[in-house]
Amino acid sequence: MPSSGSWLEQIERFGIQLGLERMQELMRRLGQPQERFRSIHVLGTNGKTTVTRTAEALLLAEGVGVGAYTSPHITDWSERIRVDGREADFGRAIQRVRPLAEEIEATQFEVLTAAAFAEFAEAGIETAVVEAGLGGRLDATNVIGAPVVVLTNVALEHTHHLGSTREEIAREKLAVLRPGATLVLGESEWETAAEVHSPGRVVHAPGGNAELAHAAVEALLDRPVPWEAAESVRVPGRLELRSEAPLEIWDGAHNPAGVSYLLSKLPGGDDWTLVLSISGDKDAETMLAALSVLGERAVVTASKHGRPLPADELGERARRVFPEVHVVPEPAEALARARELAGPDGAILATGSLYLLTSLNSVRPADVRWDT
Image (tube, rainbow, N blue to C red):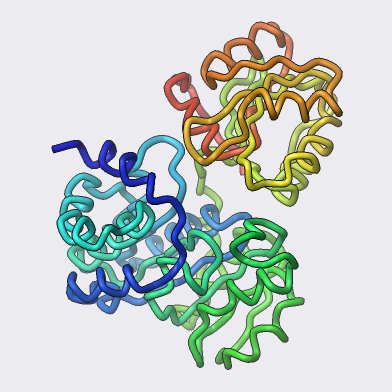
């Protein structure tokens, strides 16, 4: 029998199949594990994983038994399911749901979500912080009926699934709201759109990911919560400082809004050599144009997962805005080429897709730090 990771890669062929029927059936066969804990449901275009992991840290500091579910992973599959601040036994979690999942031909994301909920129930945690996958209304996570919902932000993404305007996408995400739930917003403009779902109250937290997580935890616990635990949170693949000399940063910015945020956080004064992979459903032209302000040289590649643009095609698009473009289809070889081109005094940025960083994980250096 294939390992859990190998089997999950095999069923990736089912692709994205939005809809709740299979997930609801899987929950029924598992005894409705999602009903055995309360939840904070985290949705939005960017920042979901950071909000989820920060809320996890704040709850742990308050003595609350907590599970955290995030996606995608950067280091390993087990990164996605955490119990009380540690990675769960991922193989055990998957095997618990695999027979039932195979019977109904559940998708990869449905299997992972069901495995997380069943693991949380088995561990007896009090609260789960759950990151949505795609959208909200038809996302597999939308079986939890969370009393607190976070909407980080809304930008144009997955338009063929969610709608062609920010307003349409926001409606898809806000559809997870149950009457009486608390909604925490990073962008105040969506309060009116949420009214159709009769939220109990709306909390505005526009300062950033830490502020969103803090507001969500305070809403859930209904009391003030200290900030200190949020300050130590480090999330792989988000402004991840790989090396100081030469400077090398990895960041999973995978849409124009994410790139804009990344540009605002990078140190200035450097001529960057970029390693790029971008998924085929993203606005590659806008991302490339924005990133081109960092330097003249790009090494383009294709991640091993995430439906990337072929390296040759991405290279053609990159040549419209970068004077120097190198096409290297294998991600690890692309990073090696970038290091050669940048030299000992250069600066390297790997970005465009979280799946690119997952593909590069095998070349992870021993000394890794994060900057949030």
